[in-house]
Amino acid sequence: MATEVFGEIDPPQRLLMGPGPVNAHPRVLRAMSADLLGQFDPEMTAYMNEVMALYRPIFGTQNQHTFLIDGTARAGIEAALVSLVAPGDTVLVVNFGRFGLLLTEILGRIGAKIETVDAPWGEVVSLDAVEDALKRVRPAVVATIHGDTSTTMAQPLDGFGALCRQYGALSYVDATATIGGMEIAADRWDVDVVTGGLQKCLGGPSGSAPITLSEAAAERIVARRHVERGILREDIDDGDGPRILSNYFDLAMVMDYWSDKRLNHHTEATTMLYGARECARIVLQEGLERRYARHRAAGRAVTAGARALGLEVFGDDRYRMSNVTGLVIPASVDGEAVRRRMREDFEIEIGTAFGPLQGKVWRIGAMGYNAAKHKVLITLGALETVLRSEGFSCPAGAGIEAALAAWNAELSA
Image 1 (cartoon, rainbow, N blue to C red):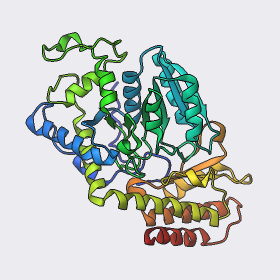
Image 2: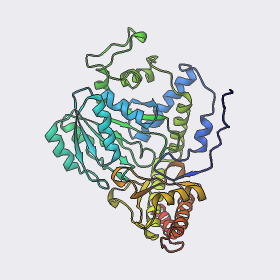
Image 3: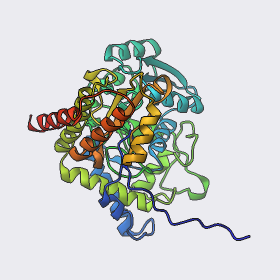
């Protein structure tokens, strides 16, 4: 029997307005079609060095150790945590949604002693509460999410790293959902490790995770360096600390791969590096402040438009992410029917929710290539049409008018 080879991939031209992934910028896709190179060809290592330089301003840092982890955003999270945290270490997790819980899941598999400081979904954790927890548990590491797309809340981080350092702890921030759309200020926040992903505000595909490490974090990780036996070198010494429990995510070896040492730890995902490089070039060519303003305008337009349609916006307005908005599903409406109609009739995807918000909240993302005025207006117009067809009463055209006014007001401020 002949093996079925299926058809050529030909996905629909769908507008991805959920919490991520979003549509990739065409320049990124073009860059990813370039020819492969040998991993240590001089042109390839030059591109690697360029990536490091490009991502420093995006992370808001001068950190030397700024590079990519091959894998989705979660690969960056796991690499950071498994390299920073040894079994038995106490880690304090700032938990205000699904992805704070993910940190506890990863840390549990590492064998860490986990403590949490919590806020209800839709709120954030105060710096005072973080300090109280630091005094109580004296952790080795404090880990937090910056923007948690499950709740659409952004944790304030000014003063966070300095507070952790005051109590002898290193700090980790997962900025997967905010990098490239909200300010990341690793140096000003005085945080030790920040990781991200391409598939949201950076406007690329999932598959590469930018990361930056402070010197303090690098020192802790290098102390755990145990180079695999097949690539031992006289110029790279092992550390005295416990061996990192993952080979692939061993940042001690990955740092040496990205350094002038060029330790042959793995083969770089070349096409993803090309894509990550182009994502960063697009961000910096637009300008960080201009880009953040565009994301704020998109988020405020979604919020204003939804409220004009009579929908409740979920969560605390003071701490709302600029790029993902939660909308409470009206009791009279079948939330999944609306999402299905949006997809089938308009080729627009909006998101559902997790955990205690499952079936109660839609999530609309306007980020990266999709944080555009016309895409927000098209999405709100389609949502109004579907809501009305599902029996929900909303004023015709009000959502688009309110969104347009909010967009223009934000960008003219």
